[in-house]
Length: 319
Image (cartoon, rainbow, N blue to C red; front, side):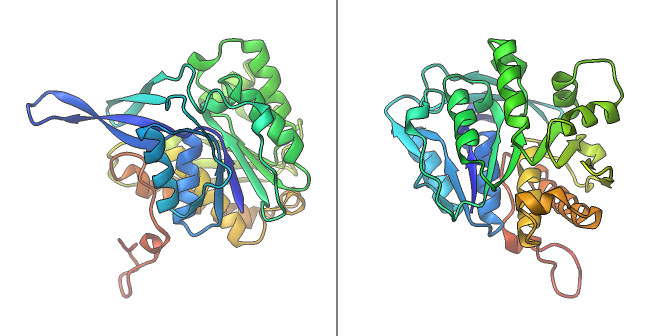
């Protein structure tokens, strides 16, 4: 099982009302939630560790997880409110305004960390949950305690507006990077983590030097590049589709990458250390394909496995 550890929240998506004015419609979301949903839909055994509210939005999130076959037995519930993220769309690109104070997800503490049975073979961390305290400290402690021989993927998805103490955040993130096997970053993430005026390769090498076996750099429509600790570099182009919006694109890419590595039997700490470029190419391409489905429709709506199966005689994806 891949256990996704991090935020689950409600995206308030702008939509026109009957009266013509723009309103907001609640949709389950959150970076880590989206990755868990996508993994579950791809047929990968998946669970989620997060804090959920008992309010109507929290119930909506739990129902959505279970509908996509995500195990919720490690979800921690409370009567605190659900985090809300109001989405602003401009040219298909999304920006967010978060309402997160005292929320069920943010107030997760180290004393409620769940046990990790042997069936949990990989851990995924990321999103705003790595910046919002006290939950951020709980997730860092969970990684340190549960790492063992499990494969770990980290997608910091850095949002500077969430970081109240830059020095504390940098120290926490640095510690988690040192325990990760795969680190996925955008251009913006990479430049924030390594702010020195260096080349992309030098910045990636600085992250690899901390211990990860693989750094994946995503550039939206310009594709993704995987950098192996052994020196290999693999590029996978983005798949060209009509973009409706980019909500959840990176999160779905993460799921596709993890799903293919799992299918290949390579989502293990030892195997990632010796990952062959050809296997990485397969994983990156699958991530790009899965993400292409998500950006072609509104909201974070990852594809089901059957949608990826080519139609007989056409070679075109189903669904």
